[in-house]
Image (tube, rainbow, N blue to C red; front, side):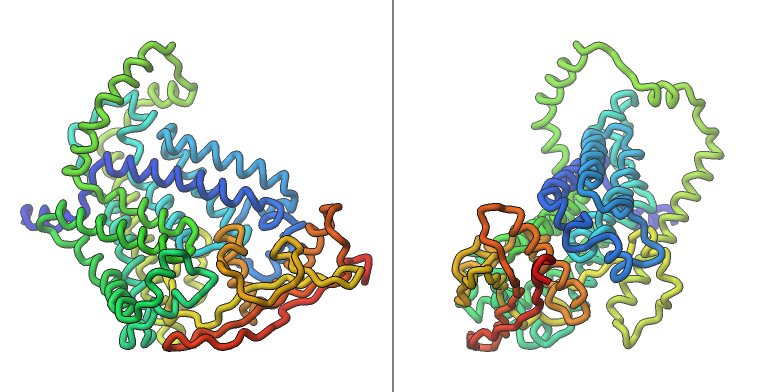
Length: 502
């Protein structure tokens, strides 16, 4: 019986050093995400942008959400919260008060994502879940500031409910992604990647190289679907665990690097690559440690020359008596019970998502926990089929002198010819995601706020000629099979005028 239990738990044993790398990678992602988002503090997070706080509460808010960022519509308040989040992420990167830094980072990330759901994508769900499960993982036990005052662990292998949840979460990401791709383009025709690369809003140079080869795209379509469906199984094989994990890591890293070269997905691919760092087996970590030890020893000698310093928090912790063994076991049982319960809930949420509205059995009253703690998730990239509605935006502004300009091209004379690279029209992937949501009929309420925002920032530059009218135009080009390209149709999504002209 004991040996059977050892076999069952093998796939869920992780190396403490791998968890430390996962912590550092997650913290670095938080800093990168904040850096990208900070370029649009006013546009995406203030009342002078595309989603004022009152509009957020009216249209995309649930009673169970929370957001510190929604407490004020001033961009200056957002800047303070961004700086606080960066400091906390830095503490997490260093492993300084790791548990507290993880909790604070999770709260600030959830708050930020709740402030503007219109620019979030699947990678944001995964980043949020890495922090959530990370709170229950000992990812600050080694290679951290906190570990300086503790003796080195006798063993690096670690297994708990949190490791089960972490590995299970990774599997759910890819299983649900595959199962949600139920359209014939994925399961029968093999044309999904053809249609994905037909989307000019996503197409990158690497995708242009692949696009003219339909037979290759068909093979890659089925390969993608089977990787997502079958590869996670390798995470649960109890024999040759290290080799299976190296296979999973290698395939997924190559898979997401391939996506990054062909499609404009922002930091989505980086988040997915970082998410598998916790799977690194001792074989890889021993190799890495041998190369880092000389550098670490130099850093240790340098640090030893610094004056000793401890925070009051550390002194208080050191003076606290350790818990009795009985209480430690009770605490671990309570913690593992909570983690298993949440993981069951997450599995339930994902199964309900895959079942769809027709087969849904998760009632709305049971969803409050997912919305409150943001363990809600959806892995429907290009699912169930790939969007066929493609096109590009023309921001058609009419000056008081009667000239028609395109604000999307810096005020050049308006032209309806497709740009050589449509992705170049987007400042970053957050704006691309916003423009995608802007198209949907059920999001028509968004359109006036974006139009008025564009007018305001245009007139803030005294070098720009004044406008008396602005139209947000979408040049719609529906993707067709067999490389047929239909003529684009002009659709006016919104019209607005300066307040002074109304």
